Structures are given as C-alpha cells and as structure tokens.
Length: 300
Image (cartoon, rainbow, N blue to C red):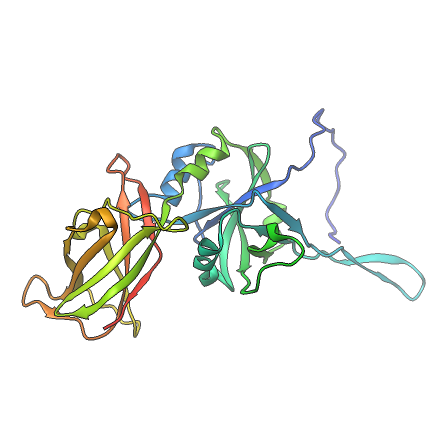
C-alpha cells in the first residue's frame, strides 16, 4: 500500500484489453530506445554486424502468466489488508525447435532487460527517468527436460521473473510502425558447425549447415566470416585468428579453416581450444547479420 494522494480524473473512451504476448525482445541491461516505434531501431539491436545487443524470441505457440495473487493478511481486529505485490512471473514457449532452444540454455539464470510484444502490434515496456523506452529487468530461466507428454506446444519454455516492481510503475504500451512479422524476419538464420577432421598443422575441417534443416551452407567465401570469441581457459588472446578458409567444397558446406596465432608476425599453431563463430552479413548500410552460428569449440 502506498500513502500517496489520489486525484480524481477522467477515463478514456478506449475499452481495449491487454492482448496476448507473441514474443519477447531480450536486451543487454541498460539498453535504451529513443525511437521505439521504428523498424530500424530493432534491426540495429538484433542484427547489426558491428554489435548485436539483443535477440527476439517468438512465442507464437503459447505463454502463461504465473504471477502470484497479492498477499492479504487479517489483523487482530479482523481487518483484511494487502501486504505484498508479487513480481510478475511469465512463461513464454519458444516458437522454434529443440536445436534453437539448446542455444538458449546459456541464458539460464541471467538477468536481462525484456520487452514484450503483443498480438495487436504493440510493445509493453518500462521507461527510464528521461523518458526513453527500456525493458523490464528480469531473470531468465530455461529447462533441460524430456519431451512433454501432455502438451508438446510447451516443450521449450522461457521463464521470465521480473525483478523490480518500480519498473511496472513506469510501464506503458507503444504501437509499432511495422508488423511483428518483419521483426521475426530480421532474426539471423542459425548455423551449426561440426568438426569432421581434427585440428592439425594449423588446419581444421568443418561442416557448416543451416540449423534445424541440416542443409549445407555454401555462402562463406573467406576468413572474414569467422570471429574468435574466447579461449577455453577464458583468457583473451587477440593474436588468434582464422587466417584462411579453403572453400573448395563450399557447395557441400565443408570448409578447411586455418586457425593460428600471431598471423601478422610468425604464425604458430594454437595450443589450447578456442571458440569461434561464423557470421555472414548482407553488406548493406547498415550492415545486418543474415546468418550466424552458435559458438563452436575448436578442440586441439
């Protein structure tokens, strides 16, 4: 209960209800949006080659609102009062497949900012003190489980536990200037990398396919399509790089990657595993990512 003054005011002539949640935008914490209605704003978040800061997850299958009811207590003289406002707890069910859901397991237990997309083309969001649209701070969870026996639509849940009640005090709805389908189309296509020949003499042979379908990905032309993410031991070695790519069998999705360190000086084979990622962009302005792989561990 708040001891704030209440002032009588009017009501709008709009009788619209909250619409179903059809998706969620996961943002890096403290991300702000000064143009929340524009498609370009979301393109720069989910697909900008120079730096992705968020990801859109479609919840077209279903979602649940598991927020507890407010807690009431009875005083010694019999008065009933509300004593708590539970934080919202939502579950969205990913409208993709198991291979995509596995890539989201790394979100388990992480605090992120989230914006919910509604069926009527609006977003539900919070605002910061300067009026910029921001996400609700929430802790996300996923589940490693066997297939559901009673409802297969709910196999891939994303648990969203809000963390700050004052985010709701500044909550609002904003109508998008584009269709949610267009945002779904901005999501880069997922790729998978599979090692087929072990790392030796600086080279490793891999197969790269489109996630889910397994179709060969033949669009890689050179080493600029690969990024070094981190080493196995967590150290940062900026000298490690994919220095060359043999695309002789690219039509079949097979590539030979030359991965070495100190390529600008004296090239040497790497001595510990590194995580790499394949990325392809459309070359436009802005340059947007069209294909991206899950992190892949090069074992040495």
